[in-house]
Amino acid sequence: MHDLVHDLAQHVSKAECLTSVENREVEDVTATSAVKDEKVEELTVTSDVRHLSVYAPNLPKILEVSESYEANKLRTCLLWLSFDDLMQVSDLLEDFSVQMLLKFKCLHVLDLVGITQLPSSIGEFRLLRYLDLSENQCRTLPESITTLFNLQTLRLWNCRKLKVLPKEMRKLINLRHLDLFGCISLQEMPIEMGRLRCLQTLPMFIVGRDIGQGIEELQHLTNLRGLLAITNLENTSSAKRAQDAKLEDKQNIQRLDLEWCRTFGSNTNDDVPDDDVLEELQPHPNLKGLQISNFWGSRYPRWIREIDSFLPNLVGISLHGCLRWDNVPTLGHLKLLKILDLHQMKFRRIQFHGVSSSNTGSVGGGDNEATTNTLFPSLKNLWLTDMPMLRQWMEASTCSSSFPCLEKLIIKKCPMFTVTPNCLLPSLKILRIESCNARLLNEGSFAANLTSLTSLQISECENLTVLQEWLLMNNKNSLRHLTITKCRMLEAIPREKLQVLTSLKMLRIIDCRPMPDILCLEDLQMSEIRK
Image (tube, rainbow, N blue to C red; front, side, top):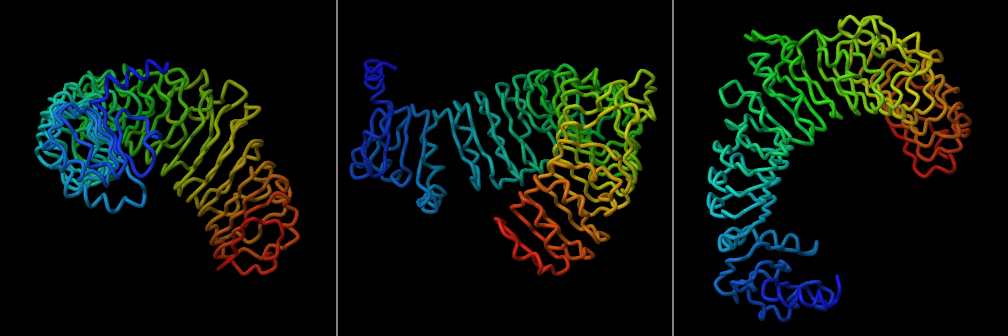
């Protein structure tokens, strides 16, 4: 901005912008009108002020000398402070902020993060566009919020005790962003949320059984973007209602979480198979992240069986607690997939493969072979966790390579998992084995071919007696972090075995047998060896 234009802007807005600063020169503050602490008595909040920036400890003094707080045009009120002033000012604002704010009813932006109690008079701020109530302790919100017809953003981020939203939320027809992330106690959605057709942000939707609370309320929310987590899907009473949600039309949804919240094996009166519901929840092809949790069906929907055609842009997939699926779906030819998370599944064996021309649509694709030479060409992170029945990882025989880019592999709570393919994982850098059988690290396993590990973590492998020398030798030039925890049968590691690890910087051996011989290793930046 040219200096002359800047001077003109300052002159025009001189009566509209006021700034109170701490003990430093006014010239350091880019504001139209500013005073230092010692002149704060001269700062008056007049009826023309639109933007007020206040060093928070000065606030009471400023308002005392103002025109009975008659800042009727105030749009922005910014309180700022140093860390040392934090406790002092938080007590001050607790007693003072609400009654002060009631004098500023023309505010467009109001930030009340952490407020302990929200007064019903909040509804008097009729011009509010942005209201942030994040991290408060409220269990309910005043119904008067629904009279803020100009409200565009309502942030309730991490309101962990909030149980219900105001009943008349459907009246906020200009609402664009409703941030419910972290509202873990929320029990239901208000009725007719589908009327909020301007909504772009709605990270959570809780499906109810009553009219106006079903999944079909999502039908007209075509502008939704980012994360959408749909929970309590067991309340979807028909496949038609799932179809009416029209998820495949929501092209701006980046991540979709589909969650059934009942306990597996519990008694229910459901007449609609989960298979039929999931079939109708096909997302838009633009989707990048998908999570399915606690699904009770036994059949993969077509859009998962042929996932590389229906969802070619997927970057991450998580399957949690889908206990009737008995093998991994055909994911191997997703060219962009980087993250695969399998948790609490009842797989006895896993065979990673892609879609073949003879695919019959059965769960996991049976023993069909992949039609291309490389599986999971972009996968970087793989989690296999909490699968007590898993015994074997099989490799598709027709593939010349698989997992060429895999960098991180976590295997946790798979106590019967002992058989793995003797495959190459040339890019693997981080390996974490926890609460598993030590045979996973035998010479015939995938571990025998690892040559680029930078971090190796082994925890609670009770039958681990020896840390294989070849595992250390193969990674001697790359391994930087080595952690072994609660492996109580592990024999002492000879010091000379560790001395070959020329890149080792951190060594942690916790709750294992005593290993005094390795306490004096040189070049370690951090070491922790204790019972």
